[in-house]
Image: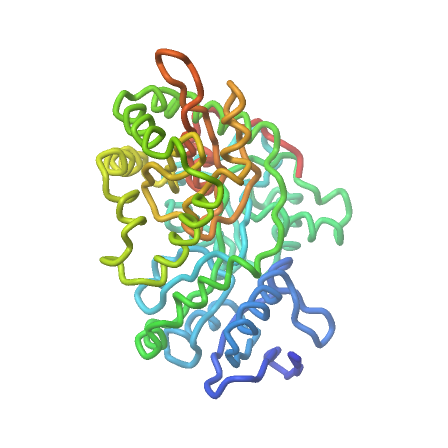
Length: 416
């Protein structure tokens, strides 16, 4: 069982069971790291407890001011810090894990005008929490952040008094803070900026001494994440417009159709038992060296797979994975390795297979790509008979696909 010890300058959470203790640093950022009396909790803390329990690894968490939490890892005094977004300064001495959390960043202000994604020449007076992920982003995007404060409550007070024009914050974190504040401090407008993921930065020194650690840690993340909320209606509409604009014509590509028809002819008499055997073969191959993965190589290394990767590379990370299936839901070609070979038992295949309309999944964390994504599936029809012969499945990375100034349509301002 984890135990917690409250000390004058730090909060320590530890779990025993392994000879070498991993020291992790963090700061209090609800709902990811939360102090409840002498106990440390929160969604990221709970996820780490689940992961390290599965790994049977001993760990301890110290609560420190964020800047010190980061610097201690650079100085070799700790093995990692969390919860952090991508930080250019940290990449010199640490590597970011698979995501433990998904944040939704908004500009909060009392103006209906949405701030630009680049602060150069904007003249906006912007404040931020010292050492926070948001300040890191603001600095990288040419915003002068002044003043730097210690908490979200101070940002709300400065905005209400007119001392600043705007601040950047995670929507969920701000809403938690607003429940403790008078209604007079509520910002009038919330302008969506982007989704962003948070993970653990592990010291490169530690990873060098333990080369298998990060892969094992990332593998266990999938089973330890909390559930995430659904996308709003306007976000789904925005993703649908992006899909129609960029990808709708792909399913009519002659090379794609020819590859699907060829596999359908090959699998014409395949039984459900054989499908399950192929799916198990796929899973078994993932434990083999790459040069021994016969079925996997057949799907990853063919002309259609090469074409899919070419299309994906041109879209600046918007697409997390591309899957083309035959009429049974078996992979014909993929741009990235998938968790399984048979998609036929999954909604992202069955819904579009029987519909003329594209199917959009809920927001999920994908184990194979280790990204938060939405799948959009569309039926592939035979040009002659219009019979459904397969499905094209496109994974859209939520971080890249929904960004304020890069999206096909703009989002309306909403209240916090």
